[in-house]
Length: 468
Image 1 (tube, rainbow, N blue to C red):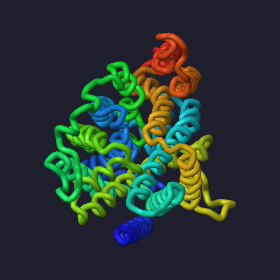
Image 2: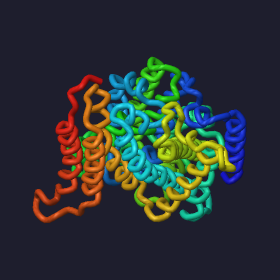
Image 3: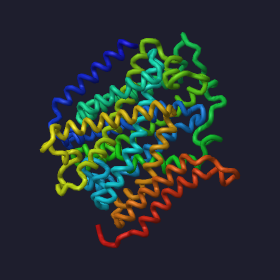
Image 4: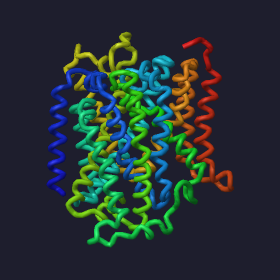
């Protein structure tokens, strides 16, 4: 396994170096010249979505959610389908990152708020990917959690700052194929008896006592509603999704890619749900539960291949998320420029400075990766870290973005207040402990729902009647 890992890392270094050679300017680095095909964009969407926090975290949650873990990807597919009516307008208004879209819809004030809030939430997403990668490395190597987290962060941070969007798009399609194939193969071995050399449980033993799909005592319709609000909506109005779309060569390409990715996610969701249930039958395991399943059912020669496939998709999701966050941070530096055509970080001219815009952008990526690593060393719960970050983003931005894409207008000050208020309420909802009483036990849920309601009310109060 260690040899396979070394070969894999050398391959990543080669791809990163080759991509870095072709990166000439900021548009190359951040949006791959806006020339990507539907196949490339769809592959990148799938690889990003099927990252460690989604796959590994969902399967790990099987002990609590059972078959209801299927909902994570089903809700994601629903979110992508909901984006299709807005995709054309989003592509036309957007440029390099989500704050560009916000500025186009509402002005520079809301853009500044978006540029401050989104990187905070998205750094948590990057941390979740580091956690997932570390758990994988722990299972297949002798590394401790801390060492594994450092190795994972160093690999994908270096890969991202070297080649940017060009390297991501060049590898994402292959990585998406690897993870889908790996999940299907793993589920097939688990379903049809596994490796006879190992004491893998039978199908009847798997199903007995496992929490059911679609709902069970640990996952109610209210939980699904909240998952749609805090998780599914990020597939409709999330920075990573828009960053993929903005790489497409035109609107039709972006629409086709979004639909293709959603269609792939539906069957994959049920494969993940089955593996989540299967994992429960293995009892207590160390490290990622998906790797415990692989050890239980796969022939030994296939285990390194599955491990590398999983690790590659973790890194693919991590580099996309890291790049999205870093693009937005770079965008803060160009605020105040009178040239609206200057892309993010290009406002940092070389006059009077010794570094090029690309160098400064890479420094931002490096610092962002270090912060995410520090978070991953403190928090080790993948799904908890993921959902906390997504909840803050969803409560802050989903309503304003969809409001603008529907052609509605609001005064910039009201948009900024709506973003901040929604984000604060969502964060309070995730962190608030259960209070006494039947209603008190749902305090966090009430605050989460209030984030969206209050957000919409503030926008309605500040609505402008002028046409778009």
